[in-house]
Length: 206
Image 1 (cartoon, one colour):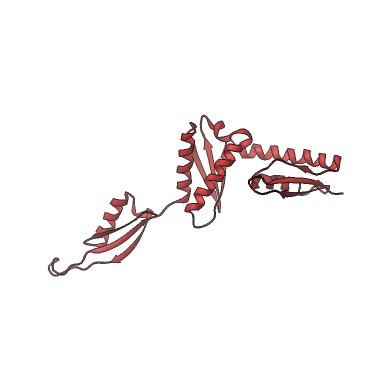
Image 2 (cartoon, helix red, strand yellow):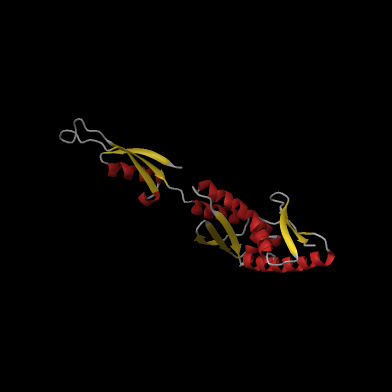
């Protein structure tokens, strides 16, 4: 956290001096008054300057945005970002000409970026925030694909009488599979392995 201690003839002047040093505005800072100062005789003798400590408030969502902009530019695929927040869930919707580079094969690059963005946002947040990164409506399309996959592999598990293991997936994708098959009375699902290689097993109920 950036912070400075500044002095001035009044508290207001001390705050202005601190804001100038930090190159920010008052609404983005916390101000702690250390000494309100004292006016001396004739405004000179025995006077004491006001002293304040001003700290910049860091916005975790802004920091996550900066991270994504920086990484996308480094990858040669600059993006524009739309942010939506629902409670502790933060959605970053990315758009850009070379967005396919950021999605990657089966969304692997997007998943990796999402994981890193989650680390960044929670480094600066005082409460845990869950990040969802999306691009070109990839998450909805991926969810539909996963649901179709779940039903197809559930049929395979029932037909063969054997467990079917899926490829490793992040937790929110595993949740899609679990939910898709939650009402299927002929199979049960469970997760196995450890992150980031945790995967789902679809097991026929015998």
